[in-house]
Image (cartoon, rainbow, N blue to C red; front, side, top):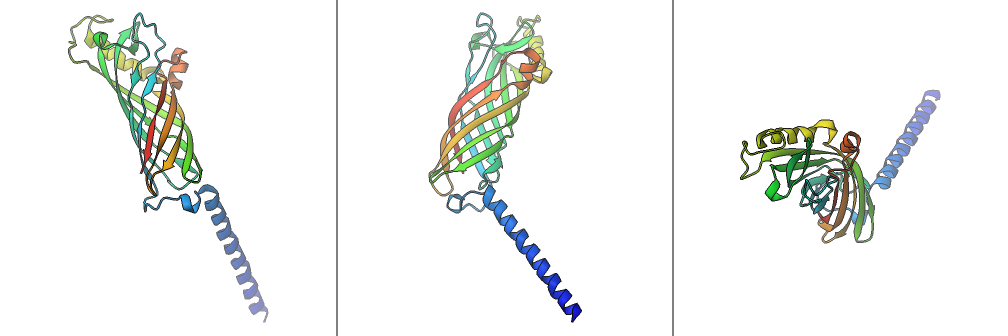
Length: 237
């Protein structure tokens, strides 16, 4: 009899523990997931992200020796994972092109007639995204670290033997690339927001804006050279 009572008591305790654990897991899922009517019907737990976001590239150098702050045209591709959660990650890779010249040992934006390099720029951004689900849309804000990878190539029409700050254009190209990677000028921090409207059950689009802060440059050069401020459109599928 005692063994039977002990077995029943143990079974009741385990049943209560498992029920409480299941309830806790359900509460956590409800807390960090979108409302049921806002969830995507896609079988994938992530969204493909595409962004077109013209940006102002801040140039703090004098326009007497460099170009005014140019407008660049990044195109960004990425993933939002998970796509049903209030908290997610959104790794993206952006690409844009610029022209640079070397002045006083620094790589600065250049107008096309004065350029030394055509610079291929790739920004890898890995922010944390916070989503707020509304009746027919969702508002997102994010922040996180980013890496700006820049590769200066000798511009078309420019010869390595042409005159440059260090004596020749070829030497200037090497110095420009070294400047990009020295002093942690590649390290950025981004913050932004978007408002996406539900066009279909699996397609959303809306305005997006972002600021990319050159943390490494602020520390190394004590200025905001290379800050990017963008405004464009974001599409999620």
